[in-house]
Image (cartoon, rainbow, N blue to C red; front, side, top):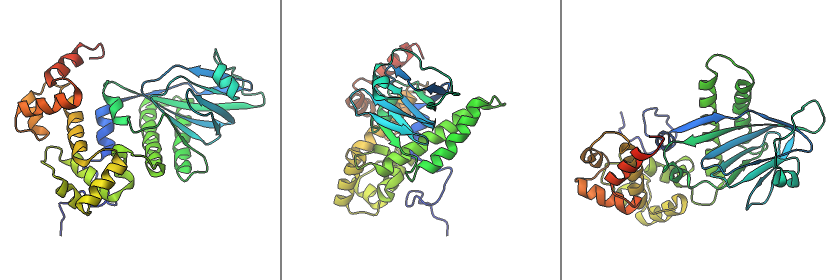
Length: 314
C-alpha cells in the first residue's frame, strides 16, 4: 500500500522530499572558493582576517596549531578537519606563538623537514541574512582523524586535494560539489556530537524532532499546530515541546514562523508579488504577512525588498 507520509522516518531516501540540509543550502546560495593549498616548513605562521561566512580546512600532512581569537589553541594533526563559522581573526602556525604573532605569508619549501600541508575552502553567501541560517554553529568545530566521522571525511578530502592539484576538465564543478559534500559531513558530525541546541541540524540526529522539521520544510504554508507537529514526531505534546526546544533552540511554532520568514526573504529577491509570497507561506492576507515579517525581521517586506535591490551584489 502506498503511503503519502514523507515525514515519519529518516531511513527512506526520498530524493524529492524536502531535506532541511538542501533547503538551507539552497536559501543561503553558497559560493565555494577553493583556496590555494598551504605548504610550509617549521617555523611558520599565517594570520587571517575575520571571515563573515564559513571556512572548512583539513591537515593533509604534518601538524599545526589553530588559534582563533578568544578561544584556546587547537592542535591539528594529519587527517584532522576544522570548520570556522563567522570566525574572528585567527592564525595557523607551527607553534602557538607563530600562529598568534605571524605578520606575513608562510615559507613554502616542502623538501625540508617539519613540513605541513593544509587545504581549505571558503563558503561565501550572497544573502546578508544567510548567517542566521548558520547561527547554530560554534566559532570553531573540530573533527579528529580518529573520530567516527573522520574516515568518510578523509576519503572525500582526498578527492578535493586531487582536484586542487590537477587541472582536469570540469575541475571547478567537481571542487564545488565535493566541498559541499564535505560541509554536509562536517555539519552532521557537529549535530551528532553537540549537546547544545543545533537548530535545523536536529533533523539529522533526532528521528522524532527531525520528522517534524521535515514536515515544516515540506509544507511551510500549512497552518501547523503544536498537536499536529507532536503527532508527526509520534510524541506527546508536552514531551515534544520540551524536546524540540532543547534540540532546536526555540519553541516549535516559533521555528515555523522563522522558517517562513527565511523563505520570504528569498522570495522578496524575486519579482513575485507580496500577495503571492504571503499565500505560499501560509498567510491569508498581505497585511498579516507584513505584520509577521516586520516582527521577525525588523522591517516591512517592501522595505526589505528595496534594501536588497540597493545592495551592490544585487
